[in-house]
Image 1 (cartoon, one colour):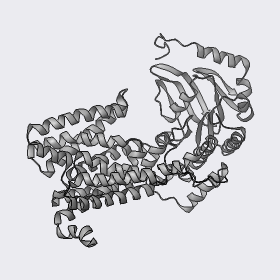
Image 2 (image 1 turned 120 degrees about the horizontal axis):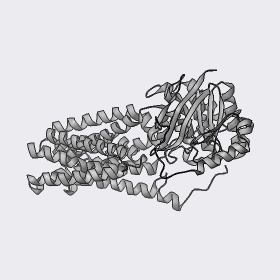
Image 3 (image 1 turned 90 degrees about the horizontal axis):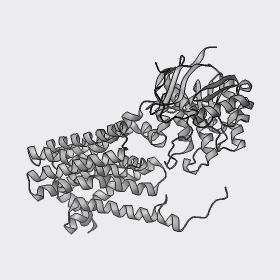
Length: 289
Length: 246
């Protein structure tokens, strides 16, 4: 009975297995990025970047229809242009990074929607915005797995300067030149993951699998390594649970994965031991020293 | 004695307005130099110029014996993010960056060194404490421990004892004295002139330009201090291009 409800959908249907593998890859790679975005107070950057990717993907789509290669490459290019562009504008002009990022992504999004509407019906647009985790082919799975591998290796490589750049950027700048490149590579990894995520979940939800588990991990733990682990675990669990629920209830799977992640977040908000609401309302007795 | 830092016709500033104007001279290796002067005299600016955080409007700072990034620099308000989940030990360990870089493992002798540095600044037992829980004085002690670990030949301190109680100041001054004994070059921006007279043999009195420089008791005279104050009040919004700018 339980087996039937929880496991047999994956045994019976290949598209379910593929969806599960895809979401696990996304959750694994997205978790350290999400945790660092939150700690760097850049939670909304992921959202802005996700919108920025749209026109690139749309131009790829315009040329080649719904096919993986051109849309991925287009998205990657658009994302990197916006990431690097807003970084350069922030350094070269009086505008701060958030303002220039907002400007770039708004232009980018408007351009993207216009380009999508040039061809294609509304159904195609829905695909771009909300993805299709149930239709992952071999090429997409390989792409997702490669992105996850590159991201995890990249984060491992950058871990030390990334932590230092976040805690004490002035100190890192005084002892090393690593700060600038670290920031750029980090943003590039974020773009890479959003491009991968939008194949499976769509641009709007790709950010969710990155940020929601990370935000809830922040409420659960004070330790950055633990936060990354908790975030990855939650992301993978949300992928699995979202797929199962969507299978049984015949609901769209992408949004359900995010809804489950959102549910975890709400639970952490109330019960999180590292700053959740319960800790506020029912503080533990204070210590002697 | 050879020079550790050499200024030649150095002008540093913001938006074309000079904050340090035509500074010349050497800081000798092993010097313990206080930098004094009114607010806006260019003291912090000078330190930023030495570490390369600010490029000169004209002239040069040169470091004959070390590279710029080998200087240990404690800024006035360290832009440390106190809400970041990291503990005291890990922050102090950052001082090892020069030697361990991206991947270098932290050996057990490094760990001993870090523990000793933390004990030296009087924070024993705080190793696993999150930095968010530290007081202002404890935070400053931690940053001094990181300076110890950096093991640098030149150490720059920007108002290290501002808003720090007398006990902590005393403890940290002991460290400064130790650095002098180890022949490190220490420059400190300070406002407490009594403290300077007691602990710093040499002083540079700055008010955009050098007012006086040399042995502390010769520099910190009432006449010089008055002169420094006058210099700063002469701010001109419609300033012309400096005639001395070559």
